Length: 524
Figure 1 (cartoon, rainbow, N blue to C red):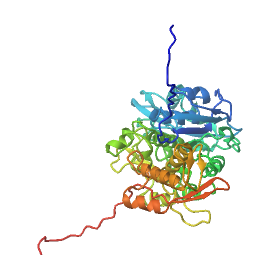
Figure 2 (figure 1 turned 180 degrees about the vertical axis):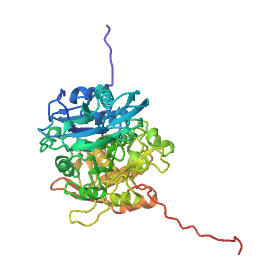
Figure 3 (figure 1 turned 135 degrees about the vertical axis):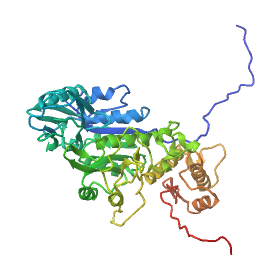
Figure 4 (figure 1 turned 45 degrees about the vertical axis):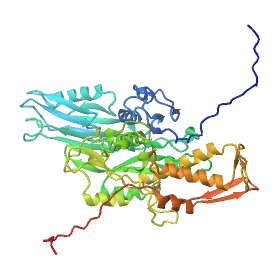
């Protein structure tokens, strides 16, 4: 090859474009009981649980944690899921019984439907032929229910009693529902024949959960679905993460309560509550002759998992979310940070069953629970769909027990969490290796002074008011307000920039107050 002369020597270095850093991708953690068939070790973290049923192998298909993960993935198969399963303690399982009337003999053919924990997922149609006795019907029910390997209840039958025993010990399974519907002459509605549902043994004793979240280290979870009745561990961790130094670790726990109105109000006022990092979905405890369970016959942790799925999908850039919105605005049909400020109320949940009209809270009870920090998912006013009500956190008072509405709404938490993360990520990138000066910055050198930091922070706020974020209030007046209330102080001896700001936040439109005056003439 001939020699070549290449003069002058030129070195042209490519550097990355100075683009804004986006917020961290959504990640959700599930913590709950597993069964003996689990392959995951108790209390160990399983990361990035794959689609296609990986949760069944890890925790057992009939475990409460696997059921919650399946419910999440049915809505949201794209967000990363991690899980921590715990073996049951030496506790007591919850037991339901379905008792048939003495000497039942079907005088007509028909179908009895048994719901075992979930109207949508574990509803079993038991065929009844003329001449079938309670023994025949009970045996058929056992076969159908136990063939469903994902059902969280195991069936057995003895002398006119069909028993449904929770596969996980502990109090959480007490919130499952069991119901029998259908009419068959000679079995359900003839003299001396009836079917009664009872909750004959309450589940009790959970595994030791103290330190159970140590395995997550510094991993950040924007959502945690906690499938244990004891909230102490998760709330200790999340409350400490809300304003941790030099990191963004905050997240929200999604939980549930199924109880009477009075007991629910009392529980919401407990020591583990009053937190901006906790959302609790409440449902009424129903006791009818042929039904025991929540007003909506679906496990509370399934509702919590489905809401966590919708929330994380809404906050994922580019995710298609139109199925879970009532807003028809074009830019709202795809997920991203901008959805943090869109209200959660009226979000449809097509995978949840519709409440019978005579079950559930009254309007007054709902308002009282809302004021106490309880959230609802229930039937819409038309009775033909399931939607979310206003989604609030349990935060009611500040550290001095003064009423404080700052973090009342989950939207407020989501807006400010995303805004803070955006500021932090972009400050960290822009000033990753900078000299600090109180004088002028030298062009072409990594330097920052008060005017540079101030201008960059003002630009970040302006970004947060734009169509990709809509977290901060836009318009000339709001931007002037932000600039006037932004302070920047440089301490050269420690190389520190101290900044404070007031952030005008976009909020959800929750109420319209209108006065309509009647007039009888438009003249004079």
